[in-house]
Image 1 (cartoon, rainbow, N blue to C red):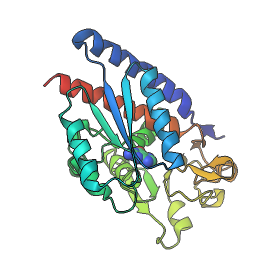
Image 2: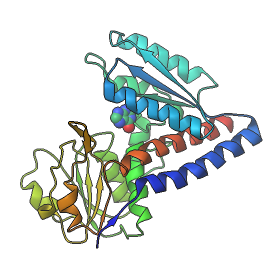
Image 3: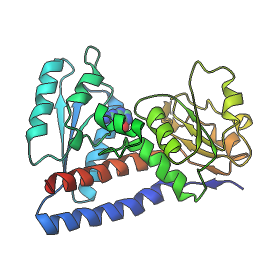
Length: 284
Ligand code: GUN
């Protein structure tokens, strides 16, 4: 029998703990954690994501603001704004919503964020520490959410075959490194992988993060595998994952739904990182 992992319930529980942390920090130091999200342009999906981040922050007693900037902004001006936010003592977390418009280098913009305020965990220092097995100041939110969902099932990760489908900096690579840290045997596969189905079938744990609706079918899944579906693909009015839920649930031991799996956890981890950023900066 498959267990559907309830991301909403886990997110609710963790958000309760974060809200307590926010209240404790306020009582002890008078500091309210503050997140600034930088949104360049008017990509409709990004606008929805950003609104949910602001709403989530407010619910936990944090302060947040979205800086909306025109898609015509020059990279230098954007980096100037980030530098101002870096030196603003009232701002603890900075997130630049991706993707950025053509002509702006995401790498250069993300590298301009102070690593202490990099609540997305994407700064080269934080990603480099993750690669070296050192403790980063912040971990990428979705990757962290995937690990929390897996841990919530109680399954042992040590020694297991984990297959990560997708190699993005935001999800695939960090999730693979975190699984490796938990002593899983990790394979990363992607669009050029030969015999993708055969590779996926080795996985006791499968993390799907490719952005291809319904790519992974039940017949590619080992009996009893734990599946975390990071895909959020809009198909008409519906949001669907990278995993074909109906065929996959027939074979999986655990599976996350879309929506209601990884999505609520990503924002939860962002809020946890924002609290930690405020704690870090308040203890300086
Ligand atoms: N766009 C989609 N997901 C993310 C994310 O986790 N962080 C940022 N900065 N942009 C995103």
